[in-house]
Image 1 (cartoon, each protein chain N blue to C red):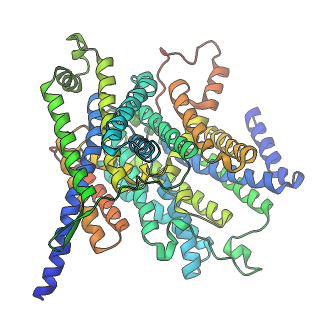
Image 2 (image 1 turned 90 degrees about the horizontal axis):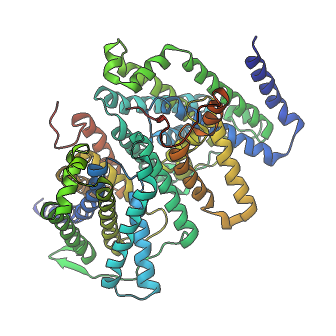
Length: 293
Length: 336
């Protein structure tokens, strides 16, 4: 009995820690989406597809143009940031006064565009960087360096955004706009510029996530569908636009997926997470950290 | 009998007569697909037009298709019983998810994302139970022994399928019209304008929304079952999941959600476009149809939110009023 528990605990502990590592990347994804939602009041349904484009960018820079990983990453972050700004300028800006559902559906159209663009331009083959990072053995537990690196970089990215929002003038203006859309333009903040900057930052975060995810997963045109929905659910669970809620929800979700996957197939981990989400919507409709009105 | 009704009856008779005059199997195949998908898109629009934008309909469609096929293959239950059971399953699921949503006033973005979770769950469950459903490789209902085609609802004859699909499609339009003329419509329009005001005026907000959601989910499950019986092959990607849900939204919006034939126009446009691209470019066309859809969807939402048919009808009814431009009255898919 004792030895059975011992083995069981090792696996459990490994799953718990892997869940935390996964949570880091999910939290990074959720942060970008939450930032966009909190400031511009728009949900980018195509957010995961921006990540997919970033992953292709990494693949081409590293595998085809033979750039080292550390040189390719900033280029990709810049590329996706530009893409985010373009998305705002071309699609969201003309719809700013339209009902929110129309904005959401328009980004659904962009999802189609990006997915099929990738299919047409890159084909439907699975591709990877060809970088295989070693596995860290700690006692009887195994952790991949790719996940540790992702977790670290995701944390650094989040701290960077936090410092930017609290310590710089532009960051303060972004937070002010998020609080009151009507008054801030009167105070001399140009909302158009702020929206564009915010979209670029949101895109940049998607680019950072792409650089990290490409270390762990193969890229193909539909890769966005495998982590896109989960990102939205995290944001809603945490309360759309609520950064801290999103952060906590990301780890809750990651643990459910990781522990659910320990006892059964990985898909059941996802099913559990989705079911948990629906149940939570009944208990806390406005997010984990909300108070009942 | 007024002119409109006469026109409708003549049009319907022409559609019924069509397969007996024009027997090209490929054209009939495309027409059957158009009719089945039109019915699915109409089902979506029945709730979509009132601002209840659901991305969970891919889930209902998947349940309709898979429950029918699984019951037939594993338990030998005829689709004649299997389809009502599949519809009931989808209906129960719709109520389980929708009741708390409406009770706790989950609207707008939140409603879209909760329903998104629903289609995600259905997709993952189908993939996870691959021992029974074949997972992402797809699933085929067993061929019925010859002579039992009617029992198994399997027909080789395209004309039979065409007439079945036509009947279901007409039934969908009749339901649309019935709702359009009923109190539900007025109640739902009041709700989509302002829920609190509607509740204060005596509308039972939760009950009305549940009714419309239930009707829509049942119809969508029927469309899924029909698609399965016709194609004799289903896979999670073609009948369930977020891509299918988005496809429904797209077609309904391009055609126009506010008019009865709008979703049908959307289905004609999308399917004909996909077929034309497939025939003229062959395998090189993979992805191009979705690229065109995506661009059209964005352009339509920005410039023609009422859809093609809706805008044309507007133009005919009041030709003077400019129907677009940025100062236009904003036509919401959903009013907040």
